[in-house]
Length: 284
Image (cartoon, rainbow, N blue to C red; front, side, top):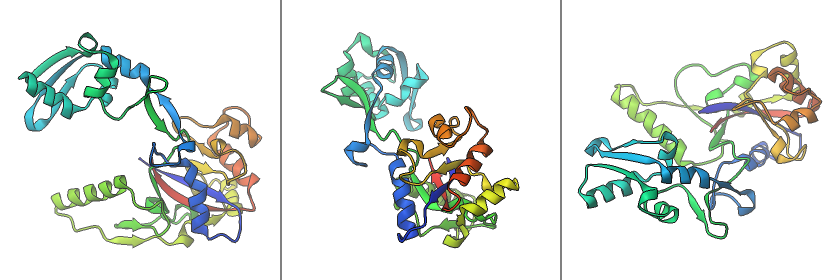
C-alpha cells in the first residue's frame, strides 16, 4: 500500500536529500539486524502463539497447489508450511488433523513448526524485536505521487524513478518484477522510466498553507511528518491510518480532541510556515 507524506523541514545548509533521509529514518520498519538495537522494542506475541498451539488444525497437501490449512485464521501466520509438509510426508499422510498442544509443549511447537517469531530466552516470551515507530518499508521523493505537492500530478504512462529515495529494498524490486511479469503476460510493452524532478516535489509550507485556506486538494496528504527536534519522534508522524493520531501531537498543535484532518494539516502548516516541505511516496 502506498501513501503520500509531506515532510516538513527547516531551511539549513544541509543538502535537501540528506535532510529528508534524516527526518524519515526513525520511521523505518525493521527488526533485529535491520536497525540499531536501541530503536527496537519487543513485541510480545506469546498469547497469539499459544492460541495457535491450542488450535485444532487440518492440513491438506494439495501438491503443486500448496498446503490447505483449516483452523484459526489469525494463527496461520505463525505456521511454516514447508516444515508441516515435511512432517506429513514423514507420517505418510496427505491430510493431517492435529492439536499441537496434545502432542508437544509450546517451546517444541515453536521450534518445529513456526517461523517469523523469536523466543526471548531471558523472559520466556515469544515475539519480534521491532521498531515501534516503523511506518515505511521504502520511500521515494515524488514517486507515484510525482508533482502532487505542487498540484501538477504526473500524467501518462511510465515507472517513476526518483534520485532521492530510501535506497534498494527487496519489496520494491519484487513489486517492479511483478509489474513487468504481468505486463509481459498481457502483451504490453515494457514500462518506460520517468525521471522524478525535485522541483516538482518540494514546496514552501507557506504556499501549502495558502492552498489549504483555499481548499485545494494538493494541500492535504495522508501523512504529515513534523521537523526533527520539534517534538519527540513518536509525535512527529501525523497520520489518518489506522486512525487519526497521535492525539498528544494534535494537542501540542493546539487542537481539540479528535480534530478533523484538514484542521490538523492547517495547524501543522501554521506552526511551521517558515519551513519547506517534500512530497514523499512511501510503501507500508
